Image (cartoon, rainbow, N blue to C red; front, side, top):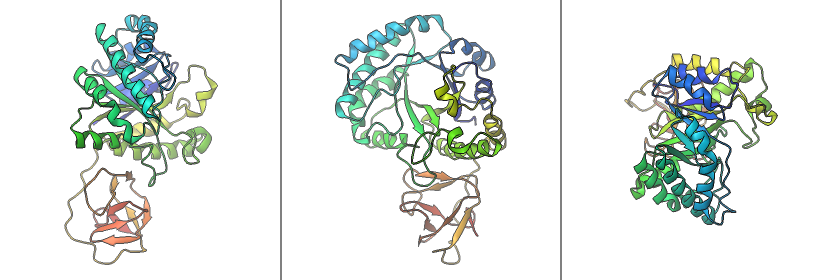
Length: 355
């Protein structure tokens, strides 16, 4: 199994190719570094290469989304025709999605952009919503466009930045809200690419270099955050990759706090991947814990332990707890222990040990 986390290549990068190729990724994203596609295709001909050109769409301000889609596509066409190794092109970047009007406009824009791509034998990565959007109740407005994307072999792009380990599902794994809605309604959705991920300004956090620092200890902390996200992504085959923002900066100082070049983040992540290329299977429950665990501390002893929304192995996990994570059991129902306000873990000895 390859890493789900892959490269977001912004040009001049010393780490992006290694992350995507040595990590066995299915997909990589190039931002105005389109000539680098030949390096990725030479190393792995079947890797999916996504291109992002700098065109913008403001769903809240658009008076004619279809015309805007055609205009943006026309502006991108020289890049598209000049870079045949790029398989998919992003339709927009963080276009809005907080209101019904914005999502309606975006659905129309994406539908037209896909049609334009198909005219020249290409496919799109539509939407690329910013982290924390759209509002979950607005997904039905995208339904017909998502169905169109699935039929045409296009992809859905989302941005997800990492929140605190046991509390945030509004930003990380947010795509599961879409998958749950699609399953309830029978809506076909395309494969998903997280076109940006990493650390950003969420709940007191920030870009990793600003929040953690830039030395080896900071890199290791960042990798631990990424591994937790990776373990969750591995549970959802609908997500084919997550592009780590960023490798390279295109010379823009604003992106340096996010940049993994010049650090050993990629080395450490690849080392973890080599040791954990497959998530070890969790053994089935056999016997309940022999004593009450309420108000006692337990430590995770498996490669990744699901934090569930209730005392049962059903429902999408809220997040994944890393091995060595220590939590306090606040309530116990059979073999299940509540360790956050609404998060439960299986407390069998195969999964956790008393501290």
